[in-house]
Amino acid sequence: MRTFTYQALPMRVRFGSGMLNELPDELDALELASAIVLCTPAQGQLGHAVNDILGDAGRGVYAHAEMHIPLSRAEAARAFAEERGAAAVVCIGGGSTTGLGKAIALTSGLPIIAVPTTYAGSEMTPIWGLTDHSVKKTGRDPRVLPRSVIYDPELTYTLPARVSVTSGVNAIAHAAEALYAPDASPIISLMAEEGARTMLAALPAVSTNLGHQHGRWEALYAAWLCGAVLGATTMGLHHKLCHILGGTFNLPHADTHTVVLPYVLAFNLAAAPRAREALARATNTDTPAAAVKKLADSLGAPPSLASLGMPADGIAEVVRQAVDSPYSNPRAVAAEELTALLTDAHTGAWPREDILL
Ligand code: NAD
Image (cartoon, rainbow, N blue to C red; front, side, top):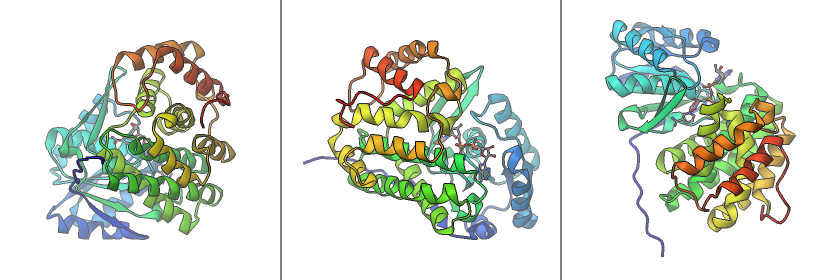
C-alpha cells in the first residue's frame, strides 16, 4: 500500500462568468482597503477597467509586466506599489503578470489577488521566478501564493487560438508531471487526471471558436486543476527541460511546453504505469503521448523547437545542463537518450515506433 503526505494550500477560489465584478467584495472579504493593478502593456485597457471596478480602493495600474520577470522590472513594480501605498496587488493576466505580483509579494509581503486570463496556472502556486543577467532563478515561498483567485471565463474569450492551444498544453504538462511526481497523492492524481481530460476535450472548441462559452468555462476549470497540482507537487524532466530551453534560448514559455511535452511523455510513461493509465483514460487512447502530439499539431501548435528558433547546435548545452543538475523523474536520464529526445523535438520527428507511446 502507498503512503503519502498531502499539504493543502490556503487558497480561496471564486469561479464563474462575470466573476470579475466581485473583485471589490473579494477585497472587502480579505479586509484589504486598497490595491494596485498589474497587467501587460497589451492588456492595459483591461487593467484600467479593473482599476475602475475597484472604485475608491483602486490605486492605479502598472502595465509593464513581461515574460520571465526581469529583476529591474520587478524593482520598478515594487517601487510603484510602495509609492501608491497599496494594501494589496491585483494581477490580471497570464503567468507573466502573476509572476510580477509575486516578485512584489516576495519582498513586501503584500497579498495578491490573481485574476488569470491564460491557462498557465501560476496563480495556484507558491513558486516565484526572477531573471537577472539572463539567469532565471525560481523558488518557493508561501508569501507569493495568491490569497484569492478570481476565475472569470469571459476574460479568456480574447485569448488567440494559438495561445489558447499552447497555454492549454502548458496546463496539461503540469497535470502529466503531477501524475508521476514523487510527492503525488490520491487527491492530486484525481485533480490531475480530471484537469488533463477536461483541457484536452475543451481545446478544439476554444481554438476554433474563441467565444465558445462552455469550452472556455471547461478550459479555465481545467487550468485551475492543473495549476493546483503544479503547486502541490515536484515537477520532473519536462519542466526541467522547458526551464533550461526558455532560459538559454529565450524561447516562448507555453510554445516550448507544447513542443516538448509529447516527447517527454513518450520517454517517461513506460516507467510511470499509473500516470500512463491515467493519461490513457484522459486521452481516451492507448497512446497518450502520441495523442497529445496529434491534438496539438491538428490545432496549429508549433511543431518543433526549430520552429521556435532554437539552434540545432544548442542541444548539447541543454543536455549538459539537464544531466548536471539533479531532479526527480520516474526514469533515469542519460545524456545519450536525452540527446535523442531533444533531436526529435528539435525537428518535430516522432520517436521510434518501438517506444511505448
Ligand atoms: P504571458 O502571461 O506572458 O501572456 C502571453 C501574452 O498573452 C501576453 O502578451 C499577454 O498580454 C497576452 N494575454 C494574456 N491573456 C490574454 C487574453 N485573455 N487575451 C488576449 N491576450 C492575452 O504567458 P503565460 O503563458 O500565461 O505565462 C508565462 C509565464 O508564466 C512564464 O514566465 C512562466 O515562467 C510563468 N509561469 C509561472 C508559473 C509559476 O508557478 N510560478 C506557472 C506557470 C507559468
